[in-house]
Amino acid sequence: MSDLDKPAEWHGARMDFSRSMSYADYLGLDRILSAQHPLSPDHNEMLFIVQHQTGELWIKLMLHELQAVRRQIRAGELAPAFKMLARVARIMDQLVHAWDVLATMTPPEYSAIRPYLGASSGFQSYQYRELEFILGNKNASLLAVHQPHPEHHAALERELHAPSIYDEAVLLLARSGLAIAPARLVADPTQPTAHDDSVMAAWLAVYRDPQHHWALYELAEKLVDLETAFRFWRFRHVSTVERIIGFKTGTGGTAGVSYLRKMLDVVLFPELFALRTKL
Image (cartoon, rainbow, N blue to C red; front, top):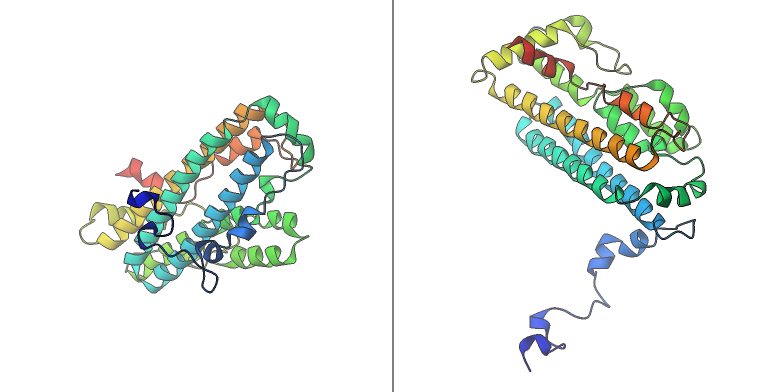
């Protein structure tokens, strides 16, 4: 009998976890793997549920990272922020490829489960809304969607009034001696990020002398990487939705693909992309 055929040994692997924490215990797998409850008799609904649940887990991690990024930029500790921003961009890459899996669902397969979804929609994802808020795409009117859930509503209210990570980057530009208009430094954090000429001039100064402003230059490029990954994620989302449901109205009442296409035009860090033309 070979070593691999000796089940009692398994090359020294521990077999009894009756008195200690196991892999499943640590990860809470019983709770996670029992959280899928298809409502239809259709085989493909499991794919739809798992796709969206795993997406929410990845968004949870992105929020965890971006909240730390904001603290690090505020403290001027950019090295850890760079690693976290790179991680978030890679998570978004992961989510882009996740749409490839959902795209295996055909229109008839989705039509079989759609009546069971009711009015539930990704538009109601409070985590995704928080993600957009921390990235600077603020919209106070969207809080109304979350009124039925006070805890979620309160978290979004806090994030609405908090500086975005880009706001913190602009404040860092000012602390680094670059001229930022006073009005931009006290801009209403509940409003979406708007282009500001003084911010553009500051970033241009950074890009024209990167050796002198290396940390700010690297921060800018990490932010560009992040927004680029976010754009790919949004585009893959709208492409998958169009492939599966065409231009039907979304389950949550939005215009579906038409609404998602409008979101492709949102620019999170406007000066960082506009300056490319100026250089």
